[in-house]
Length: 255
Image 1 (cartoon, helix red, strand yellow):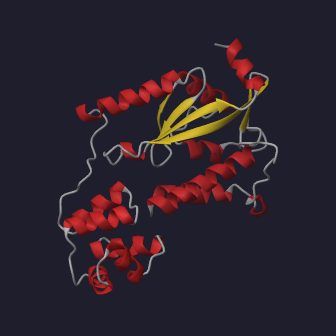
Image 2 (cartoon, rainbow, N blue to C red; image 1 turned 180 degrees about the vertical axis):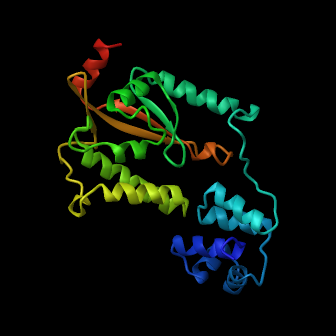
């Protein structure tokens, strides 16, 4: 069964490029024991699953799945967004994106669906024609590269594509992320797989045409990795910062 604890651990061991011998040496157990776990001849203890999960850097969701498949209770919560215990977390997120004004800040979930956005981000999404989309990658895919208000659409799409591929690698199988990655790849010609980077540019910036002005931004992305809740722990908070004085001046005049 693909959902057995042995199959789950074997998949992640191979994904992280460890042999059974290497894993056994790192965990100070016998390679025979690793083999028995993966073939289902031995059921690992709860502590062993957590130990392997921590070493292989498994996502919290996968650790829960492994524990459940072995007959143990999940260790990480998966609370509803309105749960009392998550109020401090959402309060901190709100404070972060509101304090980032007048620049755009947006919160995305694991699948790149927009969870929250500050007023500046909402206005920017509206100006780009993205306001009607729940998913940011879908909005980018449905945009017309030739008429897009993202002036460096191809470069920006490639950056997003690389991020998607990295997240699929780190988070494991995700039908939604794989679907988005496949559809975004289809939007790009084969020779678009290489980013032409301006060596004089310290960061990769996204350039927008807004109100007759060219605005240039780079992003800082915060992961909520210390949050123990599965869903909220997968959130990404993207803060956009001006890349040049022209963009700063635009916001100084339009506050």
